[in-house]
Length: 317
Image 1: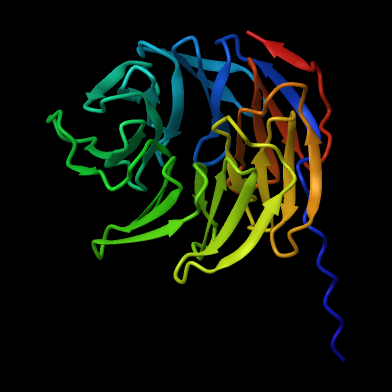
Image 2: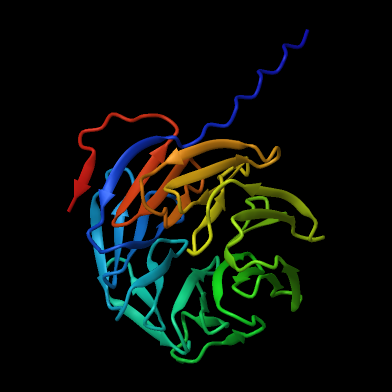
């Protein structure tokens, strides 16, 4: 006699505020988990990049070297390096342990909106308001990019790398997917300026958010629209979207002070998370656990599925 399988539990959502970090670096332009979610990076309008412990909310290191506000950052797979980009038109490769600038990469003609390592951290990809994506060899002593992708007709607002594929979103309303192994380019026209793009965890779909206050889930291979998610407000800000770590939910920042969380399959709103009264500038979902980072004004909030025992609410350093 076979026992029935236990009924699968409904996926939990990060709806409990675990801690608030006062970053003290001006407005936080972007917040990012590292590869394993134990650390977080905050990008400040005061030109600084800061590394924090996620579990304790303590400041571990400050990276200073940009000449203007820092707009995005990414940590390498082995946590030894960080890359960041700025309105000062540069991309910086940092040594995590020493806090020193390993390389400062110049070549973009305007502010650099987004940056990411490839999986082996041998290449940094950066997207700029100048409409190009530049690929930089982290091990080379040369200062020129190894490749420049200039297909976009307007600013590159977002990019994501997954294995041999590069996904970019542009203000020209197009989501471009480069198959770097095959040398192919696939374009999906959305019509509204794109603010953020990402791959689903299973690599089968792409998610994009745009300034018509809509998120769209597309089948990667066919371009077929699998879902539309609306209700949030995104009219004038470049805000983040993402998928949960198990692809069960779609999340987006909003200009009304909330994070919106929809069921991926049904398209229904599962959670409207009240972060504050200002614009939710950035978000990042934990790579494996039900945890979420949000950024509003000068603070970062850490959210979890269950309440933790807290000693202090606000941690200032």
